[in-house]
Image (cartoon, rainbow, N blue to C red):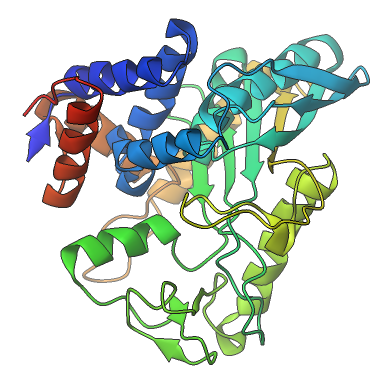
Length: 358
């Protein structure tokens, strides 16, 4: 089924207001959440809405947080999210990074005491309108085994970098440090399909195509899938995100990160506060004239886009191309939602006496 963006936005905003969010925070959180659906990252969009509500019910999300800077220098800060929605906390922190970059060239903000912040790309792209490069990292629920391990020690720990160009669309990389994000497994589960080999290992550490492998005690695999295909590099990337996001800020890290699902309780002996993010903004003209840089980015993008493709393959893509094209399409044709997500949202609406726009 397909739904217009405006209807899903108003429904999402209304639900968030019902759980106690201010209109301003609900508006922002809905914008972050729906940006994922528009860009084709369906696992991080409205399909997650009921998950946030369940965390709120368990007292793990504060709908009215007092987000504050608890430590800062001219170019850095630590933000305490007060257990707020990461959808609200991360944009606050990114704005702090942008304001610092305006003053001193770069801004770097590490966040603690937050929750799941949606798609990493949203926060990185906030820098683009200021002729800045944006960087966005977050740690997440421990569902990933390091290379050679059976234990789940890391999250999917995404990295996003957004770089402005001039005539060309911006370069926007937004990726998990696992072979696939857990949300993609959730989509396969709803569709009752197998996972590709290299995504998951079972509880004994053997690769499996069972999309429910993580639920059965297994784990997601780092980018690369196995040692022969470079999983140690994916493991290292995920570790870097974890350290920047949490060890640096005072959030929980590694296996102590609180799970997103409400039916699992956080570790009774936490090593920090909530989950962590790391946001950065770099003013281009802190390095060279912005116009020159963006012209060179146009040249870079154009040359790579026109690289000779392998016979039978499509043209070479620039990071951000598929999402940008899908966003333009979905703004017109609507956002497709699979039946289990529609039913989940319908029941959520019924509970809060908000009609879901079927």
